[in-house]
Picture (cartoon, helix red, strand yellow):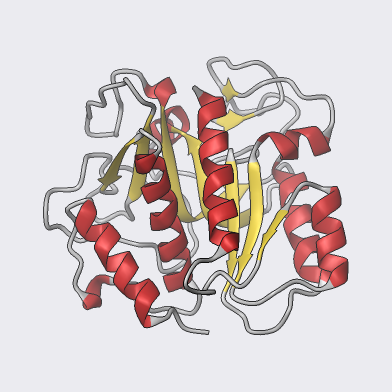
Length: 276
């Protein structure tokens, strides 16, 4: 199901709001990618309305120059080494914090800044890579990866991970099983053997970021993990999602207002509040 005219216009308006190029030609057109871009920019807009400073950044880690193209990801992949040719991301800085930048995207207080990415692959405990359509990570992790030769894959459980399904049929149980398996593999319970930047259950430190949580379900409940769909969810998918705190947001193109999008954005701002 392609992104509707109203949603595409809304996406253009959000790009204009953040001073990026906003012609029809810059909008992603791949299967499902337009939905991902629209949801991600709606989340950025919700953060801005909630008092957070929102900036579009280029792949070099610097704020996007006025009128420049914001490069949406068209294929899943890692966070690249800092480069103007790399895919962009959205920097969210907590209220009362003044962001400054460096070539890798460092801020005066990186612990108060978070990065919203589209289509990044995360590396699980098994070594397998998992794409998250939309994910939120600490700027400390993004800065470290962009400053590494060749870039790399973030590890651990994202603060926020949203899957976007631009499908007309209801979600089967297997769709939720895949999401659950991905979260289980990403949830790190110990320090990385090679010291790579990652999120863990343990206390924040040089190589880790997060808080100790003894069980998976409470850990999932502390963040925002969800599937956004153009259609609905079958009974089995809904039961699995409810038990494991994976939210279901159906019929997101519903107009004039989508309760699913309202709930998604409301939960996102709650998670942001908990980070400050």
